[in-house]
Image (cartoon, rainbow, N blue to C red; front, side, top):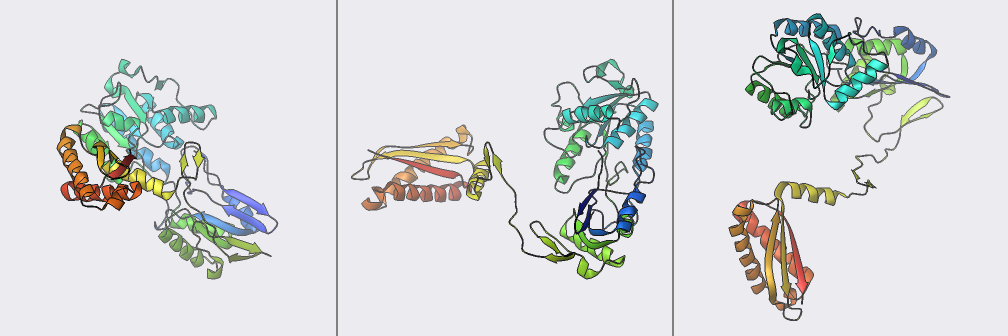
Length: 412
């Protein structure tokens, strides 16, 4: 995966967007940070710098990718069985490290996961990945080799339910099973929000007898984002007139502004921007103006952005508590029940458990009709609402559940 900065030249000046970056003095792929190029933009003048803020809370420098290589080597030395390394399929330097280590330890590498296979092939074709000759083996031939001669490169470092590693951990993979003596390496950071799924994955792997290495117990991942000293270097190289911190939570943006001010960017030239905020330049002067409406756009089939909040709320409600459909026919003139009521549920209760509950719910509907006036009984819309409220109260009181209730009234 390449990290590229953007230098956008305009009549008012150059806007420099760092993208994700860090300064690695010993890169695995031999691609060094281009100090001279950034400094040249600083010499010419940078109107605005937008810089990655993810690691602004971390002092010093972000460790080199080669640090991971040392820890991976120790794991390879200690392992007497199969090794599974899970990482992002876009982390080409990590894939390079694993394949080189596998070659040096006489192991064959098996790629698992569509994105891992595709990205590795593309990176190899483009010259970003140098695969040692004879180290790769087909995914259907791994059983030809002894356990201590196999390395599996897989997706699923975040515990994704459909990933290869997740299926392996649950014994749900078509051919691969975890066995005692296997070593699993989760060579990626725990992304906030994924902690529970990753923890569950680790527990499943331990239950199957594997030894698991992850960031809390081993140095098997380093960040790809610049820490404080590298962020200072970027500011000093480019010497921007204006500065906007990007890519991080609000606390990161605030700290990055403070860092920029500490290296000489005037406070009035630093802007904290949130999604939708607009920074306008006129005659070289920057001013924060009105915001524009932004947000998530929900794509549903052929519809783009046309699904309202109420629809999403109903879908969430259905997924949590299910649905009960109440159908009955009433006399158009008297409002008396002619047929039904019949109740059908989906995603509410198991069939063998719901029969008694639904029978009682029918009685609730009958009693409700007895206790309302004729005018309400002969108005289908009013009657539907009364039935809905009665069933909602009943299910809430009896089961502490709130299924979606859909009354369907037929007039005869």
